[in-house]
Amino acid sequence: MDKKQSTILQISVTGLMAALVLISSMFQISIPLPVGPDTRLHLGNVFCLLSGFLLGPVRGGLAAGIGSFFFDVLNPMHLAGAPFTFLFKFLMAFTCGKISGISQHPGKNIGFLFLAAAAGSLTYLVLYLFKGFVENMLLGMEFAPAMAIVWTKFVVSGSNAVIAVIASVPLCIVIRKSLNRSHLLQKFS
Image (cartoon, rainbow, N blue to C red; front, side, top):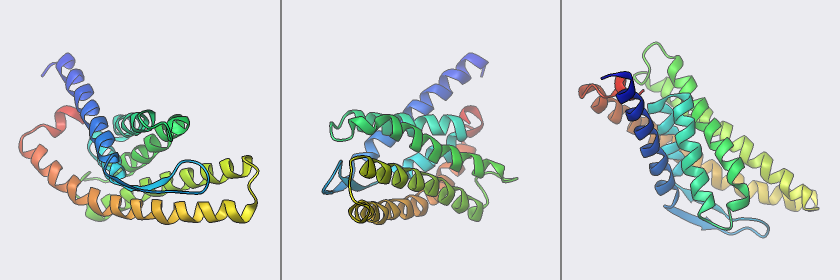
C-alpha cells in the first residue's frame, strides 16, 4: 500500500471511529439537573477509549473529540459546551492511547490496557467535574448546591467511566486480534 492509500485509510478509519463515538453517545439515559444541561449515562466513552486503543493518541483523540463534539452540536442543550467536550474527549482518548502504546506489546498486556482505560477515563472525569463546578460558581450558585450538582455528575460520570473501562478493554482485545489476523492493524494505526 502506498503512502497516499495509507493516508486515505487512516482518515477513513478515524472518521469511522468518530461516527461510532457519535452514535454510541446517543444510547443514553438522561438524568436532569436543577441547573444547566442534564447529565447522562451513555456508551460514548466506551468508543472514545476504543479510539485511543486502536488509533493511538492523536488520531484516537481526534476521533473521540470529533464524534463527541458533533453529539453536542446536534443537541441544543449541549451546544455551548461542544468545544470543551471536544478537548476533554480528545484528552481522554489521547491519554488512553498514549499509555496503552507505552507497553512493549501494545494491546496484549491486559493489565496495562485496564490502566490506560482507567487513566483516560479519570482524565475526562476530572476535567468534566472541574468545568461543571466552575460554571456553577460563575452562575453565582452557593458552594453547597454547586457541590451537590457536581456530586450527582460524579456518580453518573463515574458510572460511565467504570462501564467504559470494563467494556473497552475486551472490545480492544477482540478487535485487535481480528485486525492482526487480517493484517489491517498495521495499515491504519
